[in-house]
Image (cartoon, rainbow, N blue to C red; front, side):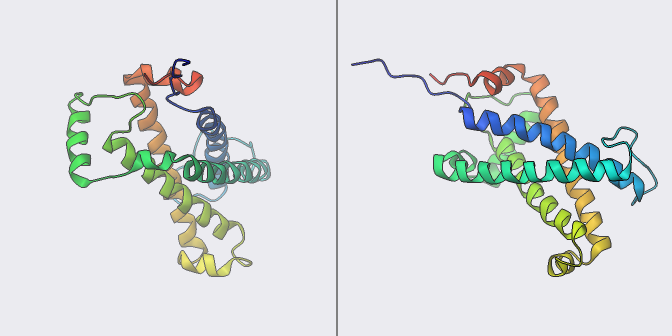
Amino acid sequence: MPPKQAKPIHPLPLRLMHWFNAVAIIIMIGSGWQIYNASPLFGFVFPYTIGQWLGGAIAWHLAAMWFLVANGLLYVIWSLTSGHYRKFLPLRPGDVGRDLIAALTLRLRHEKGVYNAVQKLLYLGVLAAGVVIVLSGLAIWKPVQLWPLCDLFGGYVVARYVHFFAMSAIALFIAVHLILVALVPKVLPPMITGGRLP
């Protein structure tokens, strides 16, 4: 009988979607900042952007948008068919509180291939922010054609604020994600090579 092969920590489809997503989100945020700079909502502008001018930023934003949406749909389909979504469940408030305290005191254990409650909450939160940012983005991109969606967000101006705060939530998630990778660097190689579960 042949020996049982070890399963990867991160299967190839997940790794590919993760890195495609990372590139698309960087383009979306950078070009979105340039679009924001053309008509700021607040008393500041972003110094580092993608697109160099409004028309260029919109072109980058729309190109990356379709890529991001397609990648997101592939992730949902793959997650449902592969059972990957089960890694996020169950999510109990008591577990989140316990793991959050452990994380803040640098005592949180990291098991290969297992999401702790804080990771589950963050991943589900960023997925929810992704849905909100896509819908609010569609509302401000086509406010006349998609007027029911635009009205759902409270109109064009409110939809812009919703879009901005959803972007901010995603940017904050990325910052926390990168900080945690820096604190626990052993999690990075499996996202490149797949790694192996015993």
